[in-house]
Length: 210
Ligand SMILES: CC(C)(COP(=O)(O)OP(=O)(O)OC[C@H]1O[C@@H](n2cnc3c(N)ncnc32)[C@H](O)[C@@H]1OP(=O)(O)O)[C@@H](O)C(=O)NCCC(=O)NCCS
Image (cartoon, rainbow, N blue to C red; front, side, top):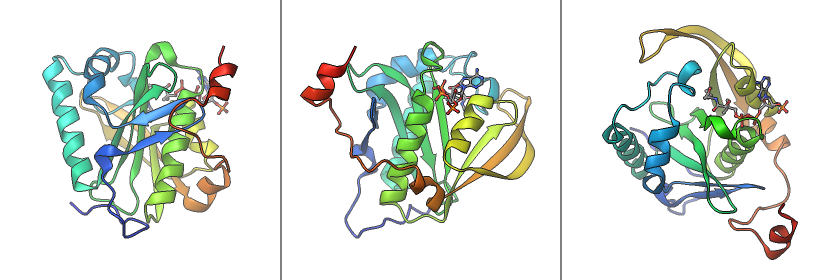
């Protein structure tokens, strides 16, 4: 598998990546959240996704171990989405470069009880900004089912334009009516905030929390 091209000659250990945003911390500490991933990646979540839920925690562990293998190889980045304050688990997101190291695919799911708080948009934007800063890429791809409006809005928030449409078979034997968005580096960077977010709350941010 071809690893991602890095923007600098410095080594980058993907298994140690942490990406802070305003409210979130994306972390590769998947093992810490294995029980949450097992519990929350369920039938409520997979309606518009290709995989099926794990029936046993061992299947979640296989997903985590495969993710870590890809991260050690430098061609995959899989992150738990957590709240900075308290580190509550919210979901997972990833940048998948398997066989497409210059045009990787973004993926995301947020646990049902945390939907509608703009966490999905914030996580994907933070990941896309990080990717543009650290990786030498041609563009990013965001595949989504045509009917998955919240997810489509996330792609469109970064200037995504549909460039491919097809039927894709799911692991459950059904089909997704997939549209693929192309997210150009220029369009992504237009949305990037100037501010760098700390990985933990500063005392000022702590004081502002509800
Ligand atoms: C798709 C998903 C990650 C979105 O996460 P989320 O945190 O609930 O979404 P957000 O709150 O960030 O909302 C994103 C946008 O969708 C809009 N939105 C949210 N729920 C909506 C709904 N039910 N109907 C219409 N729009 C909705 C939001 O207003 C926001 O739009 P805006 O940026 O124009 O304000 C989440 O719904 C999910 O995990 N779904 C199941 C797994 C999945 O389908 N993953 C994506 C595979 S491509």
